[in-house]
Length: 239
Image (cartoon, helix red, strand yellow):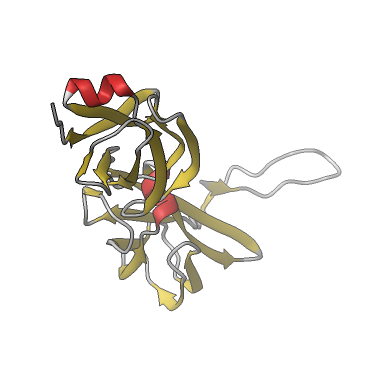
């Protein structure tokens, strides 16, 4: 670039040229966030992150704020020279909602003000959950035997969520006893217990034993999961 003199009255410019050096200030910042874990599969798992903030411009930045709301990180870099970086480590403890959701995504942001202009950059990291939906049902009879029509057999049915995701609208059925129940929500590791009964008929005494089956069923992510169990009670027959 060159500067020249100009006569405003005659509109004439001088032939002399004076070199002029212009300094272009480039104010930029970048942030890179990476997760150390590839996946998680349970509440209370801990995800750790590395956050690198770099001054990618050509002017020194002051009071650079670095925030990651989900992990609670909030730091300030007093000064950050061109080309310099600062690294932070932060962590987040997974809850059951995160397992059910299937992933944890969070965003970190670096912000600075130079010459009354704000510059910022954000980056996110996503960690996926390994989800397993499964159920178990255990059925036991309280009576060891029966010997007459109109005897009453009672049963205990325990339904347990053996997976790592919360199940909703779990149906529990025992057709021969007439049991038909719905569990609104069943958290991982949680159980629900039901009792049911059946009145023996003469044909059951003649048959020598009575067996019936209970089933628990749920749908998660458009896939059905279920489990069944039966209980057999023998008749004491006297001819």
